[in-house]
Image (cartoon, rainbow, N blue to C red; front, side):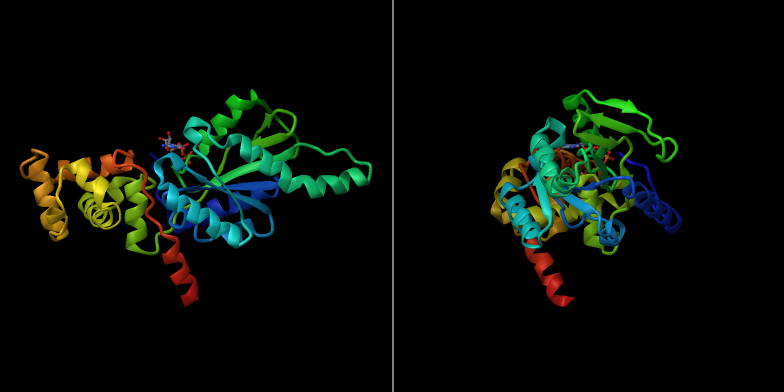
Length: 288
Ligand code: GDP
């Protein structure tokens, strides 16, 4: 779990560093959490990425709601944004990423060839908020490609390129950006998925949010996992939490109950779930 605390100075530095790295690459992979494709996006991402080619990758699809993942993919596609879904942990979707990246560069390389120049490896970097799976993805790429690290002149000190076969070069350290902090429900979504440390928010606030969300959107798996009835779900959230605590045999140890509820949901024990809905985004776009 990341321990980064974001203060304005850190944000400015992270932004500056990301922009510096972006200068070195052909394509940036913007890694998002498939369970929160909106909340896991950095608020300044468009400004930071600018005109650079970008591939949005929704990671952790193994934990997300398949139906909503499809809706999110359509959402990005409709806005002409290149998008893929992966599960970096088990290496699913990696091949498609490489194919897509080649596809995105084909026009440029075609032009080079037409001028009699050889195409070169595609230079990449990975960018995203903490805990979205950047290191896991980099390690996956390395395993798949038996990467060799090499120093290259002209590269920021300490920065190395991982050579992925002959076709790709990946910056070995990802760009780390801060998450959205603008509203409380985003904070709770980030906490529930494990993107930010539990201690930043009150455990109980996160757990009450989870109870409310799952009772509304995933009532069947929620009931089944915690042995609840529809009547229980109709209780006010705080009362439901009390009831669940008792049912779990935890008497009045609410801290333990909150921890267990959050842990079970976070780890996928209740099945795939997605906390951001495309419909919320569409409402927001209408407001703009
Ligand atoms: P980083 O901070 O962006 O580099 O994130 P990490 O690569 O350290 O990953 C954060 C946590 O998410 C780790 O516990 C990973 O094992 C987990 N993780 C990464 N990718 C996936 C995935 O596709 N599925 C699941 N279930 N967990 C993942």
